[in-house]
Length: 189
Image 1 (cartoon, helix red, strand yellow):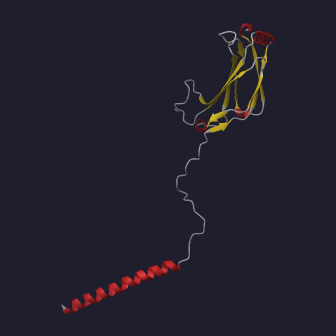
Image 2 (cartoon, helix red, strand yellow):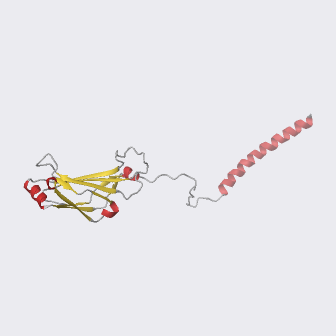
Image 3 (cartoon, helix red, strand yellow):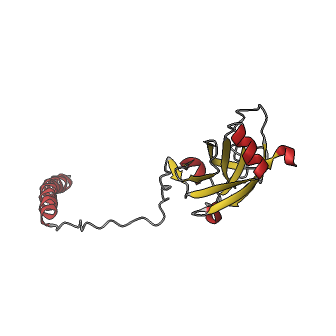
C-alpha cells in the first residue's frame, strides 16, 4: 500500500512540475514564432459570393425622335397652338416570368419618360432619362426596348388630333441615332 501511495505522490509532484513547464514552453514558443500574415488573403472558392450592388438608377443612352408631320397636321397644330406629347416606356423581358411587376400584356416596364414638346417643335433628343436600377437588374437581357407613342397635347381639343407611327425598337438600335416617325391628323385617315 505504501508503494501505491508513494507512486501516487510521485506522479502528482511530477505532473505539477510538467504543467508549469508546459505553460512556460507555450509562451516561449508563441513569442518566437514568426508572423504568418503576408497581407494576402485567400478567397474560399466554395463561399457563396454576395450579389453585386444594384444602383438606384441606370442612364439611358441618348437618342433623338424626329416627328414628320403631314402638311395638314402641321397647319392644324400651328393654328391651334397645339403641343406634341412624346410618351416612352422602356420595356424588356424579366428574369422571373412570374414577376408581379409585369403588365397584363406581358411587358416588364423598367422606366418611363414623357415630354411635351412646345408648339412647332418636332424633334427632341432624349439625353437625361433614367431607369430604375432594381427593375433594370430584373431584366433577362439588358438590351431593353423603347415603346413610344406620340399624341397631341389636347390643348385645343379634349381628343387626340394625331395618328402617329408606333415605334418599338431595342436600345442598341436606337442609341445615338435619329428615329423618324410619321404623323398626320386622325381626320386624314
